[in-house]
Amino acid sequence: MGFLHDGHLSLVKKSKKQTDITIVSIFVNPTQFAPNEDLAKYPRDIERDKKLLEKHDVDYLFIPDVKEIYPENFQTFVEVDRITKHLEGEFRPTHFKGVSTIVSILFNIVKPDFAFFGQKDAQQAAVIKQMVGDLKFNIKIVVCPIVREKDGLALSSRNFYLSKKEREDALVLSRSLNLAEKLIKDGEMVSENIINKMKEIIYSVETSKLDYIKIVNAGTFEEVDKIISGNRIYILIACKIGTTRLIDNVLIKI
Image (cartoon, rainbow, N blue to C red; front, side):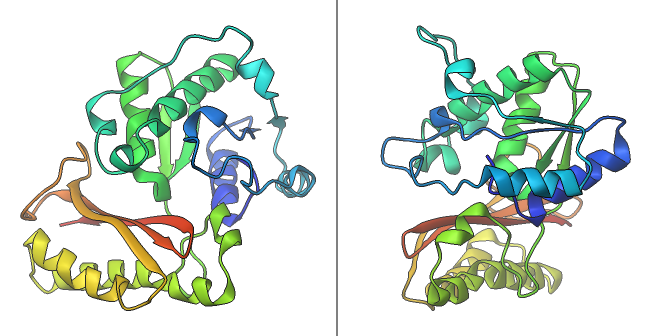
């Protein structure tokens, strides 16, 4: 959706290595924002984005107009079912309908062979994978690792909203994930115990307001009460720091 950072550019770099032609789309998609969310103030700087993409030798930049994507009398939406009903879907019930619709439109326009998404939006990537499989898109979805600041904060366009104090407080997300990894490495396998320890870190700053911490199967996104050796899990966080809602996660292979 633009206002590019190194996380976005890591997808460009991966595409440049893996494919012959790299196309970037920038589109702040209105259908994935609820009426009470930040569509109007979502950060935008298209000229800066263009310069960054030129620097990284992107072949094409596609910046459609809203009326081009959603013309008058637009009536058709794409909705993935079970995987969208919890986690982000619980707190943002219209979000994934908008995401799957815009991505399917962009896929039909561009007709890519590969599409690169970031792990930071892990549930979104899983939803797209489900849609691509179900609707028989001939596209390989590549999920690229989270890119972080040196102090651990996951890169996000919404970090722009954080005050200096909030920026410091936001580190509780990555710190709690690091603690969870250590607990699991040390043998703790009960999800509730891990989550309770993570909450202690999240609630150690006054600006935090937690939406959820969940431990889920990395394939199905179903919650797991106990972590089983041999499985892959995501630990997922959504938390407001001040008024800014941030998400973060870690993928762990047991």
